[in-house]
Length: 293
Image 1 (cartoon, rainbow, N blue to C red):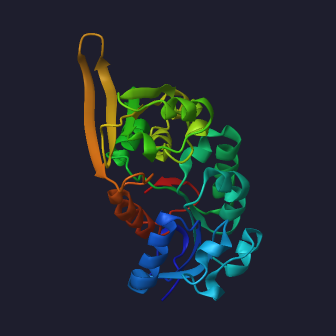
Image 2 (cartoon, rainbow, N blue to C red):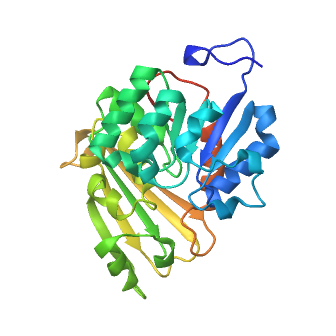
């Protein structure tokens, strides 16, 4: 198999060398998928890193375990997948993009303007793609097209989960602990301000802010709801506003509601796994830019 040239053009299918950063439930799923079906998709696993090395013992072949993430360059990856924590992108995203295409599975990292700037610059300078997986964001490409055309006027993403499905920080975590009976709005406001408080829970909102680039993290609105009656579901409601007069009720609007089944207490819903795998398969090289997949 041949490697792709710039823009992903080649006469034959390439073998893309893939490194995975993070071995939680999603990382384990991706490792299994690449081992089982990677060859027919042109993917070869070359390393797996996890903060706790013990978690990989007996499950990931020793030769694929990366002990020190600083040595990732030795594995000559074509694509690096982060499915760990936004701090990884803050610390390593720029370095990853100097060497390979990079999919940031925790796009809440880009709520930090400096991280966003450095990664975009590295992508452009080195010709590697910064991939943003759409995950649970239904209609992501349509939102991006409206942003490209300048017709996107408003975007709000509401995420509702049972209290035990959240991993929150600070006062938001304290508020969630008090939710025992009634549906409670934990937060409503800009996605930028929410991301540091819920770095593992609002990647869908962060992806929305990246897709809605004409609005960005400051203008895309996020609403986080804790509902003890919800059961094993993750619900994402998306409200898009386009051209027209909103005050008279004659503006373009789209509303969608996505109900994703989830194991009790899980941060990631079941349907998100297959969506993420589809995103990985689309990472075939798109040049030095940000690409929603």
